[in-house]
Length: 484
Image (cartoon, rainbow, N blue to C red; front, side, top):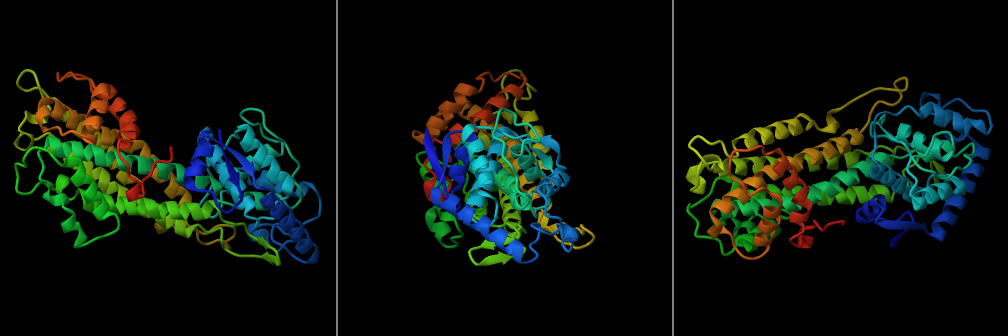
């Protein structure tokens, strides 16, 4: 098994996902551990010299209260903050959170003791998984979820399987939970699914193009160079290559579902790239408050994840039009005036419904997605006796993107199923090359019967197929390389 060395500075999103899924092991850079040890000593020194938030004071609105110097103080803080509720995070998300938190600690700004860092590394290495609840954060630190992890490491909460136990010193509690590691992990996993679904959406759209006998002029690179927004030329070039050799177009210009595909897909690709950059910065960041450096301790507001929140909003906003354009193409595939085939791609007796109901399904899904599209930046609050009066709500943005990627596959699957059926009915429209490979892959999964019948199982199989469908092409030039 490949092993990733964590050093607090060079972890990528792809490597994080490999660790979380168990495809990659971990080891800790010795120099990073020495840095952790040195910064812990620096925190102790600063604490002895004066007030250090959370080390010898209360937290939140209690920040001006000096605390007693006893070993239970850190555990009391963890217990009081262990209030997460709601759904349980799955094992991959929990492991991603652990990997993010460990790598951030290795960046050297937390002041966490070496023994806590080593215990977290051992848990990650051994595959131990904590029980983590979803709700309890607002984009200024996943305090409640990380308190659950910390108390698990301290032996007060059970691992799902056996895991290490360590002692938390008086100053370990706040530095350990001063992070948005769960939010970042959730965002990274959702981003991976967005990228996978974007790859698949291009292939599915190209199959629809062939089925609808589209006009490839709309993908001419010369057109797109005249307003070359990021990624647009690359998308147009890829589509031109995919649909080359198709039957002669039947329209001077196509409906928008085909014609504006590069313009709609490119912003989503660009937003995914930008979100990847933001997440990479977060997983290699020393964000703890206070920040412990080689020359002292500094109190700050780096825990506020405004950049991540805005990029999550941008990713959701840019991905939605890709999905709505897919529903538009599904509608085109239902129309006999555009396909030259029967309405709803039906077969059998007159009045057969074919794939008619699939339009209802996708509009249900699309509306469900739209319901969660409010930008997180629109939120406001005032908590902790009014002393914390702003938050990024990146946590909610990450969850919303995750939900979006859970609904999107069935939506794209409906278009795929229709495109495959149309090409089965008119096989002469199918070209050689990657699209034929994609068609044959889908044909193996989708029932060939054209009779009116239940469609749910085919939609599920087609949705499951999307990651493999997206892998038939090399998307590295578009910044959509697979993390698999």
